Length: 204
Ligand SMILES: C[S@@+](CC[C@H](N)C(=O)[O-])C[C@H]1O[C@@H](n2cnc3c(N)ncnc32)[C@H](O)[C@@H]1O
Ligand SMILES: Nc1nc2[nH]cc(C(=O)O)c2c(=O)[nH]1
Ligand code: SF4
Ligand SMILES: [Mg+2]
Image (cartoon, rainbow, N blue to C red):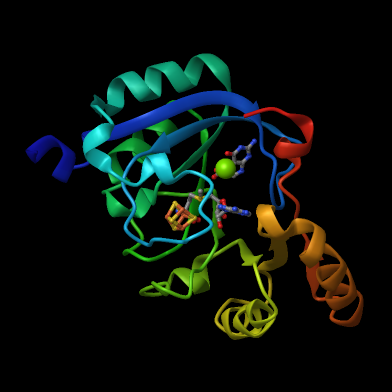
């Protein structure tokens, strides 16, 4: 649809006020906007229901912005893969209303939108495109197996010096991977540990 192509409507899966569970801003209250649509296909993705954009109703960004404003001045846009869509209109609208815009992205599609914080979580099966690595504020690599440490170093070589580096265990294998991550971070202290703390807190 034309309005979706222009980023004036977006396939909205859900929106919720919670605590950012992951990465640099963990522990901070934030309003989450989860946009449907992703074809990256991570086999361990914890929101597979987001993938098919057709199952999420096209929603006007004006109503998304008006809702968000009621809850928080920190807005996290996630998905699905938000960069499937033009994030320009939504983020300009949020910023015009004085909100801070944060994105959770794989970087698999070109960067659009104006962002106060970019969390780049690259995926092997669809690598980041363009210069998003140079703009990332944090790099958050998911560790599912040992090879992911090698992938993490390859991705860390792409970001700027001030980008904060995180290793986050894939949830289903956390008991196995946490000890390896702890050991790796102690040996390579440029990295920090990120946990999905919202899952421990039983919040969205
Ligand atoms: C669901 S994704 C949506 C945003 C974007 N598609 C991306 O992957 O960055 C949000 C965050 O959750 C992470 N994630 C997804 N499934 C996970 C899992 N099973 N265990 C740990 N982290 C996971 C992703 O790597 C990403 O950092
Ligand atoms: N609380 C909470 N924090 C999060 N940080 C990133 C999330 C995401 O799914 O993008 C997420 C999420 O789904 N819930
Ligand atoms: S890129 Fe993000 S939303 Fe898409 S499958 Fe991977 S973790 Fe899930
Ligand atoms: Mg999540």
